[in-house]
Picture 1 (tube, rainbow, N blue to C red):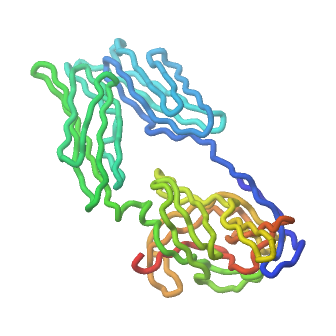
Picture 2: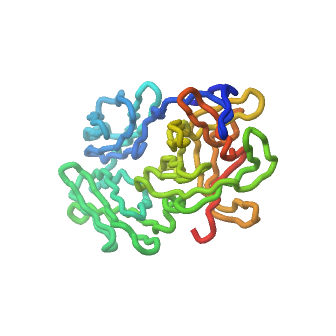
Picture 3: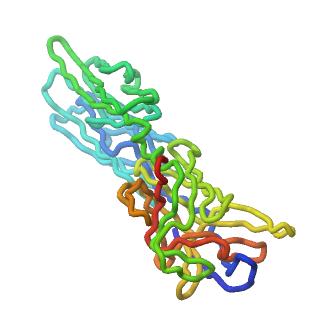
Amino acid sequence: MKRFFPLLLCFALPFYTGCGEVAKDETANVIIISQDALAFAENGGTAAIAVACPSDWNGECQESWLKLEKSPESIVITADANVTGKKRTAVILLSNGADSKEIRVTQAWSNDLVQLYANAPESVKLDSEGEALMFAVSSNSDWTIESADSWLSAETDYGKGLAVIKAAANAGESRTSKVTLSASSGDESKSLTIAVSQISREENPYFRMLGYFGLYAENWYFQGQSLGNAGTATHCTIEQDVYGKSFIINDLFRAGTKITAGYDKEKEVMTIDLGKLCLEMTDGQSANYSFFPVAINFSGASGFSTSMLTGTPGTGYSDESESERDAILLSGFPENYPSFGLVVYTGTGYASDGGSYYADGKMYFVKADGQ
């Protein structure tokens, strides 16, 4: 949710020009699942799907042949044996009042002596820093799983009908392999192959966002006045915080600022929650100032807003030197709040920072050469 606040000209300091208010943090109340489809063999089986959600959620299904068991971080689904003589389907609904996700379930029926199903995609891409993938396997016979290469391990938990493939951190170039599942009964057999790849650290989208950047914008404001020029007016370093989850943006707009940015691994984008404290300082005379990154409106009814910005990595952006470089395009600014910069709280009110520049319009972090 976005919040908007007026920016009033209520006092004058050497580098402040207005006041306002900062919004509280807000978390998107969404449900994230590890997969949205399951397939069971004719004789039934059990599968687990990981669930992430900031609030309590429920799972339900109208079909009696499916049993659901909920835990805080997953839902376990058990299918009875299929004696109907035909293929059947079902839908499981996960909901929390604000969001919902559907899991589509199919169960086979055939005259094949050997049946083998894996609830995994045909191809899997693993993280450069090491990753494990767990998936359910259904078969009416004993089954095995094997890896084609030593860097990729494959394990089983027959009691739960699960298979796990694991890769350690990749210190070299990207690599590919495969795992093969096999089941047999007498002279009959069946096999499935899952292609597996692992990216290198250089290809990892998270690490590509680290380095020294300049913030390039279509226009800049200084002390409330539009400069009418495109270019780079502030620089920063983006450092690793918690791998795969967050970054620290240092010295953006003003020396000493530290802005924590999130990372959405699934979408491979950076997220910046505006309105969070990024710097505290004094003027040497016992006055304390607190700085916050916000979206600003300098035209018309001035004011600022707190919301969440999204940083999408890409190439081909050109800065004032007209050279193409890796960059992070910023988007998500609320309507009528197109500028990005700092506001400061002095103890009596909020003001724009007259000592720093404000980016305006289309903007992106441009990585410096060699970074």
